[in-house]
Length: 305
Length: 253
Image (cartoon, rainbow over the protein chains, first blue to last red):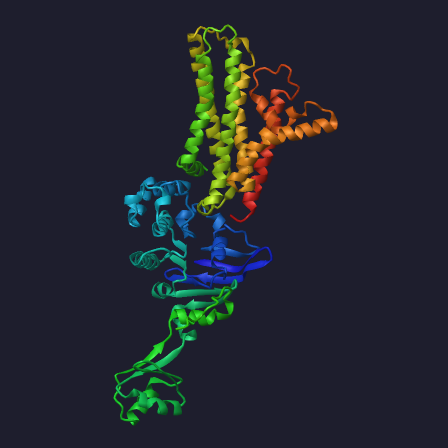
């Protein structure tokens, strides 16, 4: 269990994290979401005692990080795969980490094998791609077989096979009862692996709960209707109070239930090929919830055709 | 703490630059000293004092390079970001700071012990093989000078390590470490001398005082004695390291 309470961190006049409180429970993957500059990485650094916060308490199973005797056995963290010396080999990078916590040298080769880097373990890290460094970072996380795992953008630079692999690893770790906190901008990945969410914006907590609750509460919902003459239903749907959007081969109806749409189609003797409730994605819900907290926004939103 | 020392030792010896600097630091005084001894011939003016002075004098370069290695051992961590996984693995920062310092300083002192031993014994054999007469017993302070060389390596490493922790930048730390003893102290000493009339103030500059640890003879030297010089430069190096350690412990990693 991770507990963050009243965390506040400032850089000069800028408040990066503002009285942030949340909990991460064991046994599930928790996604840590927020727009760029929202304070996710700062929060993670504060949790690991790397940044000194102005105030707040960060506990791992009710213990402060600095009080952990062998941190790698308790908390495995990957903040940035680039935190390596480019002249060192992958194996030597893991060896100094392992030695710092009294972890046997044999374990280094085990985790290298686990992440698929055995063949390049002796190569200098400057020759590693970003994806290979991410795998090495995950190997470092797994070195001490920790019960808590914290990862900042672990899928960055990974190929599709690597992304699936990391998803499988994290869900497996969580299924073993470990606490897993993952920040990512790849919302589709979070949707696939996370059960819980912590969403922050401008350093403040926006929402904490399960992924399903989050989508339920914030994502758009509509009814999709398809059929050979479905467009003739448009008038009846509008008259019943529906907001209708026409697509190439279907109507998307907001404001009416499936039942109402079905009954209107039956009343008009229309054949339907599809009548289904639709729910927006985690991405839609996230963008909606964090719209006000976007610090950096693209200047161009549409490409003229 | 043993785990931290082991980890820091792996870090130190798995970076190629440290090996290159270490080999230069090891080889430079030995090459100069042994070539000098070898080409001494049967020159009756070539004495044990000359051999010792060439060895200790050139080993000052070794001690400066040891300071560079010590500085880079911490600045490299900040430069490449490896300080973060380091502190995430060992959150009690003072342990890391102490462990890294012990490894850097200890390695420097051991390296200089080997330089001194090889320089003295092989140099003596080479010179005597050419017909020179080398009698170290004629110089009672020879042992103190050789020990001073080893101590200077440790203190120079401590100073370099302190500067590294304070600046967090390899170019800045190395520049200060080289410019301070070789240029800045001469200028500052000269200015103070002109302003106060104290002619020998240069000998009391911290690094110059430290370098006097390696003097075999103190004839015509109007600076601090060997013990005072050691305590003085040791104090300055300790203050630099203490300020650096305080800054690293307090600031964001």
